[in-house]
Length: 314
Length: 84
Image (cartoon, rainbow over all chains, first blue to last red; front, side, top):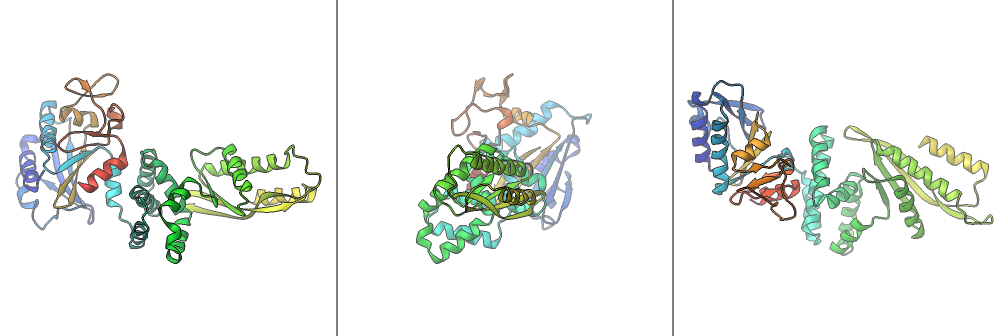
């Protein structure tokens, strides 16, 4: 719908004939809303009173309880919009607030620069897009926009790009992306497209306990890292998943100590808590456990007491 | 609540419907809906824009200009409008 088309649409429908239909324009920058009537529509739309841009919303409110409402009239009105879509007059329709949430959430200058930098390194477009969406979820969380952040996160994680978005979100939210930036500044050749794809496939330094994670997976992931002698691993979880994190780590300890392997008193390695951090992400509690691969000889009562104490403090 | 995105000189105007269901909007656009919630055009079930599945009303995220193709993936919908 061209601007002319919009004015004609408003002129037609913002009249007393269509009392079941209320039209207004909202400027999201100022929060100012102007009700449109047949008399003022032409003057307002296109005037300096309200500038139509990315931040403008045309509100169409249909009141089915109005005496003049009929399904036929409603279909005519919607059909007029549909005709514009079909004729390719410059607009499409979305049934999800998420699209407008994504559009209206602006990345910071720094975030844009980071994405530009990774683009120069040759990172694939879909990975950059995933990072941008991840950043937008973080912005909404940090602004305390709970519903928008949660809605966008759920839809984004469910999308075809969901796996990459989830991984990028985890890496960005826990600060690893900033670390990649520093690394890439000093050694850009080491942070190319192959590196990022490998990293998304397997990131040894951290385990992100999210909706899809189970206790046994935490045990398996820790064992996988143990086999590769990764010296330190951070476990991250938020909200209800903190319990999964703690139970998973507890299961890992149990399985490690009760292993059928006969160690004959030889020292063996195990991930023990080195550091823990409780923090908040937007509205929810979050936890980080830093585990360090350490040698222990056997689970003496003293050691067990110490680990139990570390664990309960965590 | 239904959002319509208009592009005008690279600007995006949102048009927000209230008081009307998504299904009614789709019917106003010429689609019909079968008893299982699948969208029909000319009586035939229609596939999503990428051809991956038949489109259900509940899953519709966007209707594309010209083709009136249906998108059911949020990121794909956002991508489309970004480049539009």
